[in-house]
Amino acid sequence: MFAVIKTGGKQYKVQEGDTVDLELTGAEGEKNTVFDDVLAIGEGDSLTVGTPTVKGAKVAAEVIGEVKANKVIAFKYRRRKGYHRTVGHRQRHLRVKIGKISA
Image 1 (cartoon, rainbow, N blue to C red):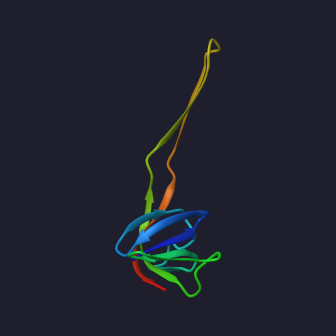
Image 2 (image 1 turned 30 degrees about the vertical axis):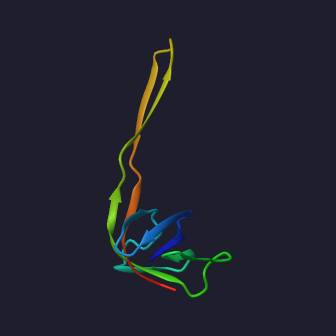
């Protein structure tokens, strides 16, 4: 069984037991969270698509913690001007383990 959930302005296809890195949503201090914005649920060949969400569908998840993504380097350079600048950034994500998917 799988579900397509919407959180943090993005959509994720999840299955039970998956570990997913999501955008920070304010659930960092909690142990468990529930996603109500389920856009689609599928099992085998059957697929239920919501308009815009599936009524009564929920995805329960366990919050593992906060992690950082790989560093992204931005390098600015102007030729013949002696100007160069390096800036790095590491985005923070919320790592969750998907539990039960209920329709």
